[in-house]
Structures are given as C-alpha cells and as structure tokens.
Image (cartoon, rainbow, N blue to C red; front, side):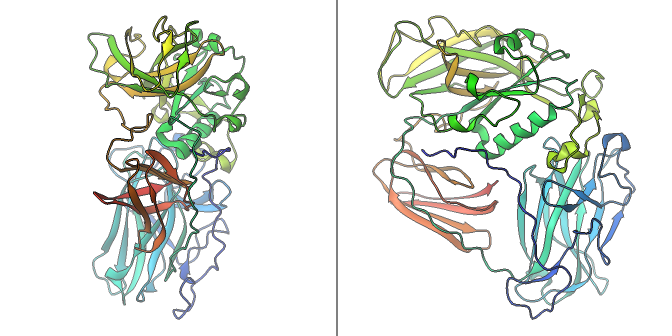
Length: 534
C-alpha cells in the first residue's frame, strides 16, 4: 500500500470568486451571490444578531469575541472568515444569526459554504433557514448537529424555496461550544466538479496495515506546546485511527517523569514516530521518511473487559507475514496505559499559550492562559513498566508466518485516573534492540475492536473501510471481481474502477474534501456508504 511521504495540510485556499450580486442570467458555475469577507468586516446588507442574549465568556477569548452574534477574523491562510463565539457565561443554547441579503432563488440554485468547529472538543451546531421576503415563516433547509473540527464543504439544494425572494440565514445553536467559522458562502447554479481518475497500483510492499505510534512531550506550563496539539490534530485528520497518540506530560500535575526519562528528551514540545529516534524533533517534520516503511508484524487487541477493582486484564494477538527467528528475545510485546482528563473545577488544569498566528486555528483565538473548563488532556501516559523493555518472554523464540500468538497480561491502573473503567491500553510489538515499534493497536475499556484495519483478512466479505483525499480503503475477497463508484452528494459520478480483489487495499483516487457516496459492487454484494473526505 502506498502511503504519502509528507503530511498534507488540511488548510484550503480561499475562493477568489467575484464578489457582489451578479445577474441572474449568469452562466452555470458563476455565483449569483458571494459573501465578501476580504475587507475584514461583514459587508453591507448582511445582518447579525445575538437573538437570545447569551453572551460569550470574555475570559475564554483572545480574539473572536462579539456581543452581536457574528464577526470576522483571520483563519489559517484563508484571510478573513465569519466567526461566532459560542462559549457562553450562562446556560442554554446560543441563537446567533447571520442573515444574507434578500435574493431571488432561481431553478437549479444551490447554497455552498465551508465551515469548521475551530476547537475539536467543542463541536458546533447550527441550522440553515430561508426567510421569505413576504413575511412568511422561516423554512428550515438543513440542520448540522455537530460540525467537524476539520474544514468541511457543504452543498445544499434550494429547491424548497425555488422561485421565491428569500433571505438565507445561518442560525448557530451551540450550547457551550467555542467558535464556529464559516466562509466561501455563495448561491448559484454550480457545475459538478469532475476529478481525474487514477489507476490503482497493482503492487503492495505492505504485508500488514501499519498503525503509527506518535509520542508527544508536553506540559501545561509550556507556551509553545499547543503547537504540538495542532500537529497531532493534522495527523489525525490525515490518517484517522491509524494514529495512536501518546501524550507524556512533564513538570505538571499529569507528569509521568519515568516515561519522560525513558524518552531521553530535554525540551518540549517534542514528537517522535514509532520510537524512531531520527524522527524526533519539536514537530512532525522528520516523520516523512518513515510513513512508507512496511512491517512484518500485525497486532490486535481483544475487547478489554470492565476492570476488577483497578486491575485490567488484556489479551493481544500477534502474527507475522514471514518466519522470524526471535531466539535472542529481540521482539517483545510492549504496552502503556493512558487516560483522558478534563476537570473544570481544578485550577491546576490549564494551558499556557503564545500562538498568535492565524495558522494556529483555535489557539489563535484562545487566550494566553487557557481556562481549565476549556482544556482537555487526551491519551496521557500513566504507566511505564513494559513500555520500553516489553513483557519478558511474551513472544516465542521462533515466529511462524500466519500463526496467531496470544499474549495475556494484567496491569493495575494508577490512581491518577480516578475511574479505571475509562482507561485506554496501547499495545505494540517492540524491537528492544533498536527501541522501535513495529506495529501497534489501542483500545479503551469496553470498546469493540475494529476488524480488518491492522490485519489483512482476505476471507471476509467486501467492505468499504473509509476514504481520504488520496484514496478509498476497501477489504475485498481475494480473486473476486468488483466495481467501485464514487458519486458527489449531488449525484454526479466522479470516478469508477473495476478490478480483481486482493484483500485489503487502498484505491488511490484523488478527491477534494467533501461528502461522497461510495458504492462497492461484487457478484454477491452491493454496499454503499456516505463518507466525509477530510
């Protein structure tokens, strides 16, 4: 399987389309209206209101604060976007409304926009309405319950109000959110985007699907450490659950000094991929050479039962794609237990932050001293024993290709995590000669394992596993013919491919971020899924 060599930024370039209302007889693809934010303020004719008076908490914002519902500020390399602050001082939902100028909706008109929940722990909700010029009741066109924290394009049919003079409006309804950002808002008749097809590779060097263990060093006192948080978000955006994050704190209330000492780091922020020392730096810049490295090991955790007291019982399965001599005990199973922490009442839970560039996303808006109620600390390392030296004797002296090796072990959850049932276990095959991780898996207590992600299972029925900008991940029955079709949400066929299944593979179709319908057809089955390409 071909994995790209560099981390792709998920920041998109702002539209350079003409601004202002254009004639209704404009050719398809030319907007009838585009919201112009380039001047750093909402244009004439656009109205904003905080309809229910729920005011944002001033202490939660360095930028983006307004008492009138919506304002503008910079974001990434997009220039100015519309933003609405939603972390309120009181209880209840916001009702922050942004209303576009009145417009006659012609046949075929659609509403397009891009949006993002800027802070990933605070998904925003809103609805899109059309208010008739004749004073009729608003028509709800769509509702978004949880806008993703990555940039998401939206495309909405205006057929319900076709032929009417209406004012389109966005009504943010978040309850204790943070900031909803919106831009590239336009109305018109748009041509479906035609993306080029690309023949998938017929070769694969990866006998098993690799997950990436990412160690990150951080501290609440560290003013630059939110930058590491941003880079981890970008990795998660690109690779999804193939990223297994480990966040090790130092010199704060979540500090794990023993684990930190084993990493042999001397500064934060710090990041490292698969414990490869050459990949370590203040960010992910050194990761690129190692994304494509194949692995001969697969590892899979069984569901972790509810703990008995504070004791966890784990079972992992390890297999290899080729015979491996392990008489010197070079390969062992290693593990670490992590926990998630959020305590608004604990003043020791905070984060210093000096990120002042628009590229910092949420941290551009968050204050220099982030309040405990806004801080979540995910995947914090809690244990050290077994993390760097592995479990002695956990793998045999000789590993046979295709054979399943079961490893069982127990660990007591440290008291720092008050609820042991909320623990997460990260297990990996460790090369104790180099210290590097060969493959990894992670599960929370009670979480169901994901079949077909870490290990090739050619005998299972065809299934679509997911999609990124670079391709569609599928599991196919070896030797069976298949056809894959990708459609836009508007119904336009973007690409197709027919072939013969080879088990797990990635069909490399290049697609823009958006929502797609992917259909996989074989002689026995036909499966369609709606996926968000980030």
